Length: 502
Image (cartoon, rainbow, N blue to C red; front, side, top):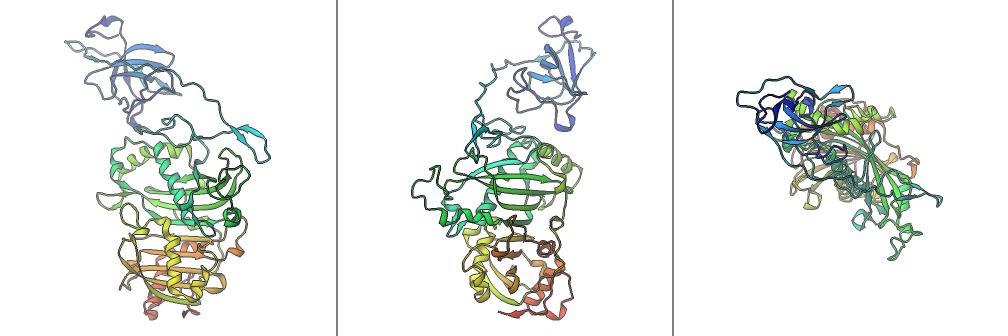
């Protein structure tokens, strides 16, 4: 019981102490007893003392005692989560002047009207409930401190999902761009951040640049070619099959190989003109590795404090949308080995300037634009390189290493190698005039043999993906391309014995 309660009969009041939630900054406070009611943006910190106003089962309505912890002055909290105690009754003696109890009026709240779930349209024309679709309640699923939730409702234990409607800027003369696939994966990744803890203030100065980007397009992407695109202006007619205003579904899962690295696997499926269709035709698969960087030091996050902030920020994603299969720091280990080295037969060195069209908000290379960059290089090289993009502008698959930032307006020397029989190319970019392998800003393996791509699009090998990020192999290509061939040592990933100038 509370003695000395200011403004009321202290003998009838009970005090509780917050003992849980310390690892997440405190316990969640809501404006109503109902667990689906609106959460307060701030948590009630461990060590806070509160006065019981009402107790309904495990739900406690409280007023906070001043000077003990921080958090909302009033609200509803859970006194336990499973077997873990979050608040416990406390026998404490009031100060001589009595407790100063803080309180506020709670807004009225009532559960939202249950929505009628839209019906799915199955591939055979039947119907059924759609398990996941956009929800009108923009706050549903929002992370702590977030002003908006994910674009579409998410299901714990399943991949994070996102929908994209194809527009003209996603297309090229032969259908859907590879860069559009990478961009919509970026949209999914950005949308996923809405479920992360926005109360982790240190993340205001954190970025997550890519270390590796690997994507394979499936042959089924050809269904969005111009042959199927003669819709006129009937873009949303149920019997039309053109790409414009067709829907794609992106699914993402995450891995946590080691702090501060994160891996992703994203798949894109063609849904069709009706977004509630159950059709799922796979058209692209990507795997990516990202690092988290402290912008204050321009280096990767390190130390216990950053580790704790990392765990808190990503807690929801780790719990709901992760797959232990992706806990692999070296993404090339997720691909089968071919036991074959890259054996180029053609070489060409060209100079290329990065124009504004390739830059992002910070005037550095937007990774999704790499396919267009490769098209430029193939055209500059001419001959067998230009033949790679004669009928189809995009490669079928690429493995991209991004060891340093590329700036708009900068000129780069581009070392371009081609293994003609496999239609496989490797591109290395250095600042103009440099012959130092450590100055490499971009290295890409690209496969252009669409005719040999299997239905699942899996064409990249362990060696194809490892090469761009393998310093010694990359160094051999730089030395060869810059005329320092005498320093080249044999390497399992690269065989330069048959390489000739284009």
